[in-house]
Length: 463
Image (cartoon, rainbow, N blue to C red; front, side, top):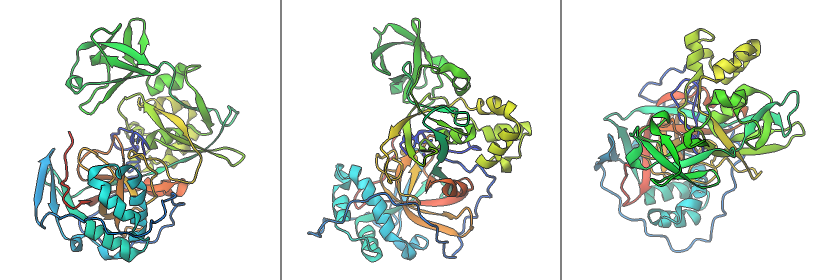
């Protein structure tokens, strides 16, 4: 999913937020066949990359930073949550010798803008800064400073690899006859209240006290009451999202209510989309760009969400016989809605989850992921941060969704998504635009994951 909710797709139970390119991820909306556990040895096809995000220049080489001592090969670490990590040799990573290490280093360097302040990453980021963008030098850097840990979840090495992208919507900055579907910022009556861990499985009634614009806290002395049984709370819920009505704090509006006009006059409008299905997919991805008729782009980033769980409209349409599951791509749903506009409110309203956006500075960098740094197309991905350290290099072995060649690549875990759950679970970022979206929408394959951590740093499970 970008600092987004999550990033996900139509046929999978979601969650976004990618917060941050809330990361919302596109979870295989086409009916893709799961790849076999063995990988083809064919050379992966060359895919045109979107413009790369700007990366810091290589600094003048100085004294090499201490590399640390790696854990011995074969060492197994099981910190909890059903995850297990085993130290392997780089020779066990499929097509390791054929990697484009210079681009992997560029992506890692982008993440170092945030990682370099952390003790475990300070030395490797300093060393990365003086490593030239040459495959040989970059390969030596990763091999010398990182230990590869193969990841397993609940005793299984294989997991699921899906894809997501940054969509480009057509629209305008003003409401026209064609562009009439609003992209909302955070509403004035929207309030986020941090939920203590002790209340995540509670159905009690608590009191809420406002603390400022769009903020509140649980406080026994608060003047508003909130019945937790009415809120969509799960074990991963970190905040209540609601509004004050009389003396009560109630859940915020659902998508159906918002599409029906509940936000009229209550939220800033950042722009208008031509197509409601394209706008719906923007919510799934958590960030994107709005292209105006004069050729300008407005960059939209995840700001917040109403906290309702994602419900697949593709599954709903298939169950009702509107489309087959294989037809529930963005293009298929758009075509159906153009033929059956009377079902638009019904179908989109099945997913109560709703995302609010903020306008980002216009530049050529990639969307900002949960790590807080730009994502580089085809060299970044979203993970479950309970099992994978945000910012860590990941080696992913899976199948290319279009060519069916092996897709084995060293990417960076720089984003999250609420639909991305589990130790061996990656949402692969393909870039932006329709071409990236067409590939991302077809990706749902079995895959294997190795987490690279600085020598001496152990994998963690973060409940």
